[in-house]
Length: 158
Image (cartoon, rainbow, N blue to C red; front, top):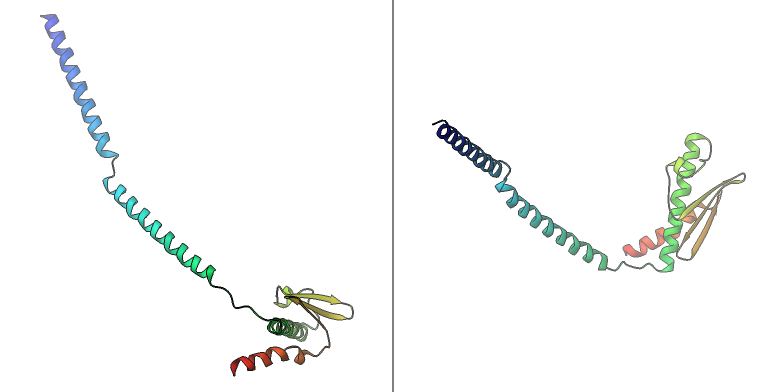
């Protein structure tokens, strides 16, 4: 009888352990599964692919558009105008502060085609673009410097 009770207790314990393990497997399978997440991943992936394709198509179209080339006269006029604007800014800085700036950034100016030289004799500007080189020294004809730009602008408007 003792053996029978021990066997029954052993069987009951094994059944109970199996039920607990089965319940744990069921809980683990449902608790860590996110059924909606895979659908959102597909939607986000599709959206990313479409957005990337649209951007690449736009960027390739933009890169294939050829820029309008400038002739030497237009490049020279643009360079003269850059020197005119820079010299005017330097003169305005001098009127405000009573001295020349140490560099163009100090005067709030910066142009990649214009080099500023502050010498004992005054300032000099050197502009280079497309084979053109123009120098402007302090006291030079500031109004004449921008004349070719204004002439080209009027010519284009008519």
